[in-house]
Image 1 (tube, rainbow, N blue to C red):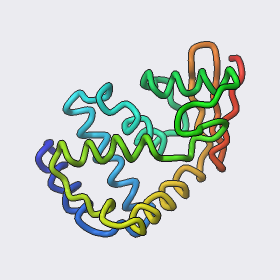
Image 2 (cartoon, one colour):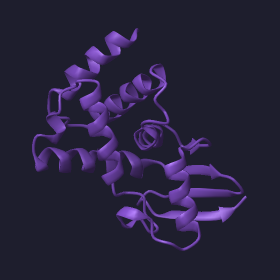
Image 3 (cartoon, rainbow, N blue to C red):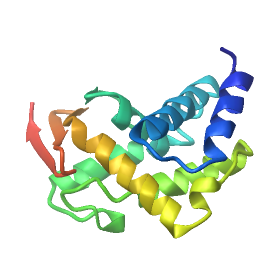
Length: 155
C-alpha cells in the first residue's frame, strides 16, 4: 500500500465520527505510517510517541520533548501542561495532531466540536489503559500504568 492509499483511507476515516477504540487505533496506525514514510518523526515527535504508545507495550526510542518531560518528572519537577506523575493529558498530542491534519489536508471532524474531542480522548484513554507501557530512558525505565500514572526507576 502506497502513501496515497494510506492518506486516502485516513482521510475517509477522519471525515466521520470515530466511535470505537478500533477506529482510533486505525487512525493512529495510519498516522504513524505517514510520519515514517515522510520522515517526520522529529517534526511530529509527540504525535509519533502517542501513536507508538497506542501500538506497543515497550518503547525504546522517544523524541527529545518526551524525553525531557520524563527526566523533569523523574527529578520531581512539573512539566508544562501540568504533567506531574501522569501522561494522560493530551494537550501536546492534539497540538501536533491538528498541525499534522492541516499539513496533510485531512478532514478535521474530530476538532469540529468539544464533544468529538472528548469522545476521542475517552477512546484514547481506554486504549492506553489496556496495557502498561515501559519506556527506556537513558539509565531509567519509565512505566505508565493503566491509569496513566508514571513511575520511574533506575535500570
